[in-house]
Image 1 (cartoon, rainbow, N blue to C red):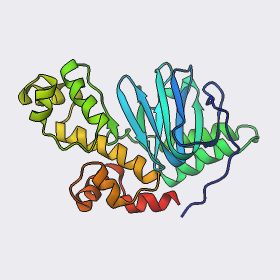
Image 2 (cartoon, rainbow, N blue to C red):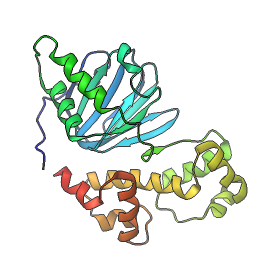
Image 3 (spheres, rainbow, N blue to C red):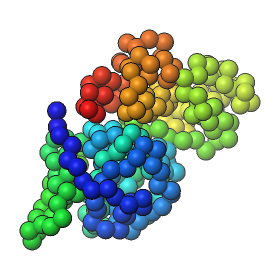
Length: 257
């Protein structure tokens, strides 16, 4: 199991225009919407973070890193005591990465490069640029969509998603939610596909996994998390979580320790 390096505390406002930095943030820490002239990678070496933009929310446990290109307004929320690392990407390199906010998988090499960039206070001439080049090379694979939760614009669909955000474990069917929102099941099903690019079931599963990551980060058991987030049994939760996160809930929680 990797050892988490211990950076000094960071101030309440995260650096957004410098080369980056790192530190511990408390559970629930929130950074209001902002943008910055450089690209930014934010990595939670311990804990988890959610990045929200007009395109929706990406959640990143310790095997993911969030990417925000220059100029995109975004906010962050941190779950669990979070060892957060920030790396600013010069504008000239941003074209190598996605043109929109995204989440990338973190390989062992990428993790070490991110930690080295944010641990060191001084570099030999050219060393930081070479490390940053390694980071860019390790992000060559397309960004992942599995943990991206898009948000709707249509008012009827937003009424449904708002109800589920308020209670992810709610077991109501789409038809039942539609009666409250004032729209038919057929209309809502069509809107999920046309606006969000996925089915109602898929969207709700991603929402529940987002909340499950928070519960697990906060020390809830796998069984408690499954019940709280709306799964009828732990095994179906484990299957859904593993598909989206790439590891079982138990392994994810063990890695936090």
